[in-house]
Each structure stands twice: as C-alpha cells, then as structure tokens.
View: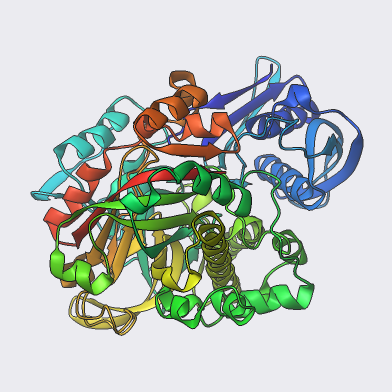
Length: 142
Length: 484
C-alpha cells in the first residue's frame, strides 16, 4: 500500500509515494478516500473527469485532493481508484493535471462510512524524490 | 529543537519574543499541560503546537501576543486553541486562523425537563434524535435551497431560518451576533460552495461534531446560573457543528487566493498554511466577506438543527416546543472585527479564534441584555464520556485575551492511535453501562472520539477559571450523544 497515515492530534497526515509522479497522485487520492470509507466495499461504476492547476507540484497535490473532495460531495459519489493522465508545466509557474476518478454513489451503510475529510491543507506539505520514488505528503482536516 | 519558555505567572507561560517574532507567545496552562507541549518539542515532533504559536507571532500586524488557551493542541498553521488579533490597518487575515469549518461552534438549548423526567425514555429520545437530525458522510438535509435562497442564508444567517419558521425570534437574541454578521457578500462565495451548501442546511456532519442531551450535574455560581436560567438536574441539549461543505469550500477557494496574495504583498510566511493577505487589500477584504457568509451559514445550520431537536423532543416526549429555549449559540472558528484596548488605546482588530470561544465580559454591548451584568455564556464541550461546562466571560479576559476562552478539552492523541487503542463497539457498550447512550453513524468515528483521546476537560477549565479569564457557572454530564 504505497500510502500511509501520519500521526497528528486533531487531523490526519497522509503520505503517498510511487515510481511516477502521476502514480503518486493516484495513491494520494486512495489515501484520502480510505479515511472516509471502506475502499474494499466501493465499486467502480461511474467516473468523473478532474482537471486542476497550481503553481508548483506540492500545491497541485493539495488542489487535486480538494478537487476530489468537491466532486465527491457534489456528485454524492465516493471514489476508490484514479487515473492521472498528465501533469505538465504550462507557461510560467503553472502546473496542470488531467485525470479521472472512479467510484459509485455513496451508500453510508454499504460503504461503512468513517470520518469526513473537510479539506486538504498546505500544512506539512512536502515533495521529495528519493530512491527512485516520488513522495508527497500533507495534513488533511477532518 | 528547543523553544524557550518562561513562566510569567502561575498559569501563564511565555515564549519570549526573538528572531522574526513581532510579539511574544503566551499560553494559559498548568504545569501538566505545559509539560505535554514541551515534551512534544523535545521529542523532536515536527508538528507541535509551540512552533505553531511562534509562527503566528511572526505575522504582520499581530497585537499583544500570539495567544493559546489551555486546550491547545497542534492544528494546521494556527494551533487549535489559538488566538491571533491583528490591527485592521496594517495586519493580515488568514485562512488557517479560521479553519475550513468556518464558525464551527456550539448551541445549547435549555428545557424545563429534569433528569428524572427522562427516566426510561432515554432510548426512545435517542432514536428519535438520531432519526430526525441528519448526520454523517453523505447526509442531506430536508430543506433544498435554490441559488437565491442560499444567497439569503449567507446574508441573513439564523434570521433566514427563523423567518422560515425554524425557530423563534428569542433564539436570535441569544445567538452571538443575533445569528447574523454584517458584511457578508454572496458574490465572494463560489458557485461550487453554494451548490455544496444547498442541501446541507440542518445537518450535523461528522468527526467531532455531535448533538448531546445533557443534565446539569453541578452549579458553581448560583447567581450567574439563575441569570442564565440553569438549575441542577435540568436537561440541556448541545449542538456542536459548523458551516458544513459550504464553509469547507470557502476555505479551499481562499487558500489559493491568499497564497498568491502572500507573494504579491511580500508577506513572510514561515509555514505554507499560514498564507495570508493584508486585511485592507482586495484579497483580504474579499476573504473577510466570504468568512462572514460562512459564519452566517453556520448560524443558520445550528438554528435549523435546534428546530429539528424541538420536533424530536415533541414526538419522543410530548414536550411543548415553546419550552425549549436557547441558552446561547457561539462559534469557535471565526475571524471578527472587534474593538479592544491595546496598551491603553482602543483599536479596531481582526481577531482570529481557531478552536477558541469568544468570552466577552460584563457590560459589553455584544452580550445579550439579559446576561450583560454577568458576561457572555461560554460553552465548553467535553467528550462523549465525560462532562461539559458553561462558563461566563470576565473583564480580565477582555484585558488579557481579547475576550476569549477555551472551546473544549483538546485532543491529546491522534485519531489513528485512538482507533488502535479503542474499538467503537466496546466504547458504546462501556458508556451504556454508565448510562450514556451513543448513537453513531460510524463505529470507527466513535473510536476516534474516545474520551481517552482528549485532555481532562476539568483540568483545562480549572486553568481558565483560576487564571480569571472565564469563570465556571455549571457542569453537565452526557446522557445521549448523537455522532456523525
């Protein structure tokens, strides 16, 4: 499981990693929804296209997670898997992401709902490349 | 890593001004509570409250001190239990000083019932409340608002709800700001935020939010209790929640705005979540207008939940709704413009209270006239297994902490470690043995909120009482707790 939760008294830190930056964003999405529901009980029935931008990679990570939360709430859908097609620089200090989130309409009983995440924050935000993997982390407000 | 800490009186500790700090840090705590904070630093824990207090002390325009209450624990950017007051002329406004759950707070309702009146009917009432008040992830309220109506909520706050028949004008009198802050501009709130808010009015949410039926166990100050209309054995109902997804989205949207503002105005940011904008700048003004919208949304939310609670009391116990009145409703995640004296000079400040409750003292015009001689009620939520407190504000609090006090017990261990240590099912059973009924939408959510994951609320209350910044009036014990 290339993500883990980090100890924080009131909220939760998430750290995701993988061989490519795109895959690391996917892991971050999984960590986010793992806080809220039992991912094993969610099926991939619908998909939502996500695009977002930010001035650097760490901020793009937060933006991606927040976009997922917004879409999940608006569409009353929980996500279990993600595809990040591209993360590319666009002009001066802008990075753009294009991706898709897969899941199904929320059913609190079936999905064993846990705690709602309010937002991803810039706190504890870190991006590192080491030992051939991209690591991204931040604290999310629950 | 080490942080210098100086004891300046029995219950007040100071991080002396040094380096980029513009003011000292000041913490209200006893030795035990302070030791916990210091141990975090000496163990090299990266995310610790003392560093957060110090970072806030570096933000432009901060007045007097970067303050922390006895329930302080690590947050994001600002610690939880932190107060940052900035000059409106040359100070800043920050998303982290408000938090994503704008105007999260507590409303406490009074009933004419006593604990004995509930005997044998607790389970019935618990089920009725659980059914009537939507809670948990994915829950929706029964009121669906059009775009125009949601704009009305953002401008009118709890007044919107009362005009629709959800509550009484009396509720407004006993709500902070009479349930509606001025300066809310719906144009500063994104369509996404409004769409997310359109079906969530009257919902509790999840996490540490709750609706709790309580009994007054102890009265500490008979005169103030009489003024507040409290008596021993009385059944109260406390509602803890905020502005829901609408507020979360405002925070997400403005975190980006304020990040570019920080760069534009060249504000030194020691920690990225502390991005901020000058209060007087275009970005700062827009964020403040949006915060006011979020504050009003939360007031409306708690107003509708109060109405649903009355309905549940009527159907479960036959209680006349008119006998259920509001003691007070107060937020603990806010930014507000207020007048305070700083070094003898009255100044207009933007006061951020992040997990800290306004606690205005006697005589302040903001306190409802019926309570003005005593001071504002301060509602302190405990845990589902312990106790909650009702305090009143004091002049000393006005002088020392911009009229602010604690908001709860304060967490001491993380949600992850709580889940490893306690099981939701076992907790529900243990509390039942003690006569406390827990109704939760999520058992793992219950485990995260285990009473053992919090500081001792009595110890935290003792600190503010003995420091004189708020004084004890009454203590309540939980009977029923509905969790998201």
